[in-house]
Length: 90
Image (cartoon, rainbow, N blue to C red; front, side):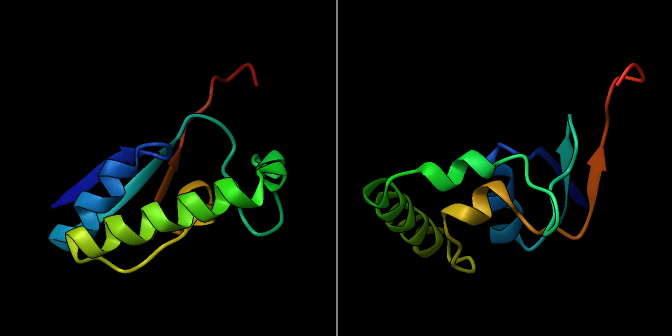
């Protein structure tokens, strides 16, 4: 079994983790990694917003009994398989 979900769909990640099913993340643009980030503006998020996001992620992980994660993981999710698709024109 494999759960395939969009990189912005946190539900896919939570379901895959909770059910312990392999997953693949879909990217409709360039994929980010440790050398390239599409989300560099995320560094401008206020400390208060980051704290609220961390708390929400903590509650979500506890509710579904999955490994804890933080707000940065939402955007830079390290998954075992990434599928990247882009228009040829790019």
